[in-house]
Image 1 (spheres, one colour):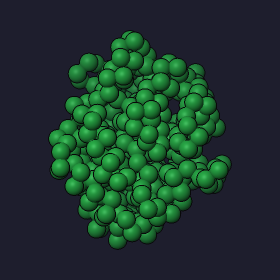
Image 2: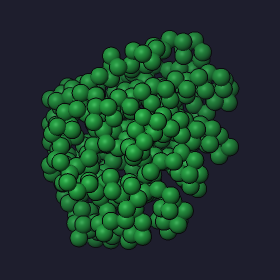
Image 3: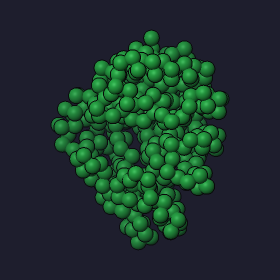
Length: 342
């Protein structure tokens, strides 16, 4: 059987047409997702129901024929498995119990217990490997330790990650112990996803750009490298994608220092720079502006073709520079795919 396109690109092959998938491709822009989500009762109920999580993962594959599926879950399931209280407030996003001191950290549960919470996720992975078309690989994922820590420290998303940065400066021992705990849990979680059938894993460092330059290597790169090394030790050929969103020129350092085979680019990254500085070292993924899937029209077609052209000289996976938004028009995804695939 011919190897799956996404895996070929991640191995460094330059393909005539790049494989395509989208961050948050299973989500609120799709009417079938909204129906399944309503049936599940809540977002977390959906994440922890293997049958329904499998269904929503498959919905965009059926509708669009993407070249990869990504497990339907959430980066905050790891803190919940460690003992944080997690809820999702309609229209406001996640709310967690906070870790802002050594005493808070001591209340978290041991690493050994996380599978009690996360076992339904592994079951979803197993179901997806059975249900997915033979040519569609499954991507597993987790939040990168810094990004997960920002939510655990603030108890919610914040615009500038100031609570996490304050703890980093004011109580580095607690901050680093929390980062270490998250890193260990993430290694375990991703290895279990791989064991269940994930063929690629991705680390989402959505708030990497909020880390000041002097500590980027210590708190974004070092934990990511630890995760990559731990996975490589057990699965030397399994591709890993990193997404240090907002990292700017630090993208180059991140790629070379972590050894990821793929790097997802946010919308701010210039394709000419990335082709020169990143593509010789890793497959690049991205980086269409998600707003174009709301806007549509000729602007979408032109921009999609420009992304393909900009990265045509090396290994490339076509994707967005961030997740598709709930107000995107499903018809515009068809238009994007026509522009990419011809």
